[in-house]
Length: 233
Image (spheres, rainbow, N blue to C red):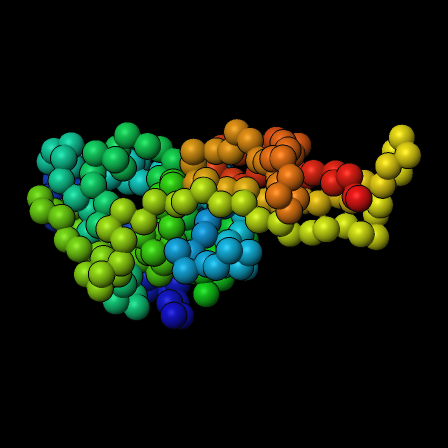
């Protein structure tokens, strides 16, 4: 879905005292930019699939835009509409409570690509991508929730990220010799949305579960990289 920056404006209207029309330049300059390292996964990503990635997102907390629009109350719902006809609903109370919820316009220091939502998309922690519209055109504040695009088609209404762990590599070319044993490095990622990962365990065949080592994540909303040196027998 290609949306040209020229002529594009984010409309914020409905139950607000100060309806807004914000250009992309307005979002970049009128609000202090916020960076977050974030992992996002598609709900249809198969185990070990590539519909998951981690980037540095840049944007503005949705809360700040809502406050500038002059909400008539601290309850209600935000109907998010996209240029491709996609839509999703977020409750106002959640948006005001969690400043991690952001309107993002850049990834890794560059404008969003067309495929990933240029000029504007939203990030909502702990949810799959199906709840996070791209190519956003408008935010309407309403007093009643509206079913999101995929929810109306029978998909999960909450779409909360499920915990998953994946083996990405078995490094047979980097064997380790230690105390007369041969160790095979095995590694991958584990992800549980914004809930984080406290432990990863590995089982070989029907053996005991053994704890892997975790690399400290770069933020509380990214995947964790894990490693297990398997004593080969």
